[in-house]
Image (tube, rainbow, N blue to C red):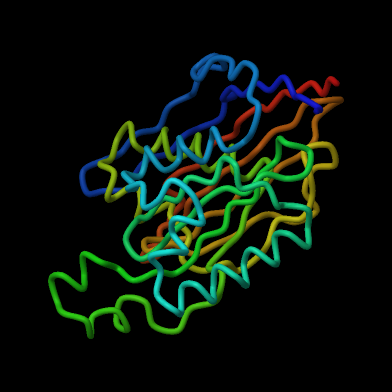
Length: 250
């Protein structure tokens, strides 16, 4: 199986945090802030980090486990999304821990290379809302939504995880989730680690819009860009770049 020696670090670029009342910070981020990622067998590692940063709960230890307790609507959505991913080569569920956050479930599915992952975000019943407001709450918290809400892979998975950890340095998990958890995809990233993106990932969240782009900078190196725009003021509240280095080896 092909392995990749994979490292990430942040690069010097302004980071702006004005996500909550009273929070205002502009700083230059040193290049060694995050350090080396070391050998990463699968990008599922970064899905776990994202889930932790935004305070997600583990809903099931496998997609099969989620499917067994899902309602009919969620089962149909899971079937549809998993077929989409399989058609693109994402079919390894051996690392597919299922997380839930508010009205969303998400999990990673590994590509046939054993390294890259696809990360779908799927609408699910907000169990806390139902407990507080009764069974009729589901429609008002979810309503008609696309299936899936969003799907990201490759560099975007890494960038989303690292950005979520940076945001959490200044905000609580609930507020960070409102800025980072995808609710609706508006543009799908197109590209790979090796090629770079020809268009970015762009998705709406509860509190704003997240844009993730990626450019190949040299052989086995690239740079991911994350920007968060606040929905009510259209202000850029977070902007940061991450260097990504990887080495393929048999």
